[in-house]
Image (cartoon, rainbow, N blue to C red):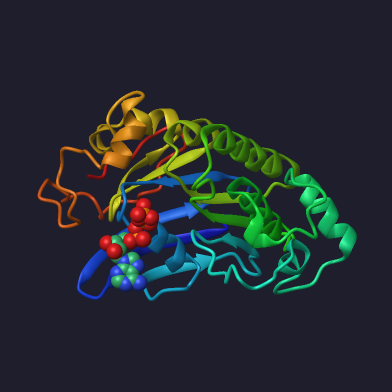
Length: 261
Ligand SMILES: Nc1ncnc2c1ncn2[C@@H]1O[C@H](COP(=O)(O)OP(=O)(O)OP(=O)(O)O)[C@@H](O)[C@H]1O
């Protein structure tokens, strides 16, 4: 039983083929991380799963699935007064003690009266997480939740995600650029580059040639991600052999990696 599943998911932005027949799924309680270079379609994949953009293929959600979504960018007017308490009551209101407890749970207790625009990056990420968790989601969908945080902040945030998963059983699907932390915090990693390059347990994916082609080795891997240095064609119409790529199930068994391109 999966919470959410995509089969043959294809997204175009104008003439650009952004996602090409992507198969993926998330099971209850699983932490799945999508990694991939800039522009590889990570946000588009999340938005297509959420039904926020048009796509072809099939997305299946468990009946009654509650999703807690934290987008990559928050479109807030910084000049508009917006206390944390008010923000957490949008779109649905919650009891004050629920809000206080949730702020404590995510590690920012007592900030109800602070202005959202004045929060630090780390505090804001935690408030966004609190807002998503207040809906009692079956799955959290987080788009680069640690953007702008320093390494300590990133590690702390991922630990929090693991704790929340342990306590509530929530599944997590997230996009991240933080390879090292992601590797330790994820049950499964999907390496995306317009298509699923490879997927599996973090340690298995880390050693997959497709992953290494994109991200390099060892500590250089994280750097390679930012520098976007890899040695195969980044265009989605990759010139190397993809002939077997979409003809088989992308979801690899837990301890295997799929070599798809
Ligand atoms: N609304 C849009 N209109 C046109 N093109 C878009 C739109 N959204 C995304 N794209 C294009 O689709 C491609 C994939 O974008 P997407 O944001 O999904 O990538 P990403 O992997 O999340 O990137 P990043 O790591 O930089 O956040 C990019 O080439 C981007 O320019």
